[in-house]
Structure formats: structure tokens, C-alpha cells
Image (cartoon, rainbow, N blue to C red):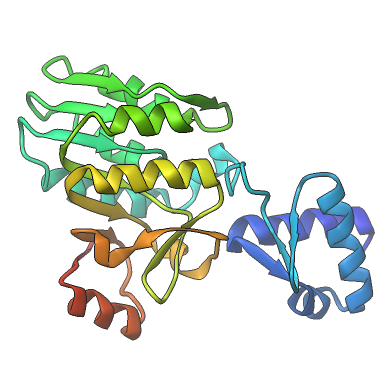
Length: 253
């Protein structure tokens, strides 16, 4: 396998799993650890990966997977999750929808709800909700992340702190077996924490792929949330934690 092809495959693995390790890549490609370390160093020099001890992760400050690819990934699961989540939101509610393709799917399923006030830091959600003529849509402002239409940074955080939402719907890049929600972008994490703090109820929408991935920045624990909508059973240890914490788990199909 040529170096260029190996680099492309390494990036595909990183996008799919959230991180790569030197040992695993050496086994996959049948090359030496030194060769893989050199590959990761070169990818890091091109700002395509960020080196960490024993491997690499996708760079902080960027989306973890190209946005069009994220839309296609597990599309059926996202639709079923979004439908179930939207069904739990009452007409007349104040709702926050944050960055993510699954939260965008939730917005699609809110188009026939009545008299919502939807606040979002997601330009794509704002565009979707603009078609709901009975509801009000408010955009937080903030620094535009061109890759996915997300608004992040202190302006977004300060706007969120002016509200108290009936319901918030958030996503994450990864969900650890300990129950920690994880992401890649420190500024996006700050926004997510503000959303949780300003919401009476907060739901995570996360398909099964989030359980097999990792990310370097902790958002919060699931115990801080009201519930989670997902499409596959949790590992027993995580399922038990949710039960102990009183976190509702809705399994969609």
C-alpha cells in the first residue's frame, strides 16, 4: 500500500472512530510502529490530525466528520430518533436545538408543531424552522463555523444565558461508557454546557455510532440530562448508570 493511500485510509478510520492508535494502525496495515508514527506526524503537519499519546485524533476546532458525510451516516436511525424526540415536545414550548445533523432532523419533525419558540445556534435548523409559520425562531449569533453552519463562542453563550428553555435537544460527537458526553471543539462544548444549564429538560439525541467513537473534550455527564434518544441498546454498565441516575432512555427502531 502506498503512503498516499495509507494516509487516506487512516483519515477514514479517524472520521469513523474518532481516533486512531499507532498499535492498531500498524496491525491493520502490516507495517512498523515507526512507519505509522511517521504517517501520523505528516498528517498532523498538514492539520488533518492532531497527535496525542499513542495515536491521533481529529483536530480540535473542526467538525469530526465532513458535514455531508455526517448527514448520510446512519440517516435512518437519525430519522427514527428525531421523530421520537419531537413527539415528546409539546406545542407552545420554548425549545433549544443545537449543532448537529440529528438535531436538524428533530427540526424537520417539528414543522407541524404549533406556537413554538425555537432558539438555535445552528443556521441549518434556523432555515428549517423558518418554514413553520406558527412558530418563532431566534438565532443566537456567534462566530460562524462554515463547515456546518454552527454558531459558537462567547456571543452564543451570552445569548443563551438570557433564556430559560422548557426543552433543549443536544448532540455530541461521542458517548463514553462512563456516561460522559464528548466533543472535539472547546468552543462548541462551552455552548453545550450553557444550553444544559439554561434548560428545564435536556435530551441527548445520539445514534449507536457515538458509542464506538471517542473525542477529547468533555461536555457533561448524562446524569445532568433528562433523557437520551438512541437507536441501539447501551452497554450494560452504561444502561445501569442511566437507571441509577434516573435518566430516561428511549430506544427507537
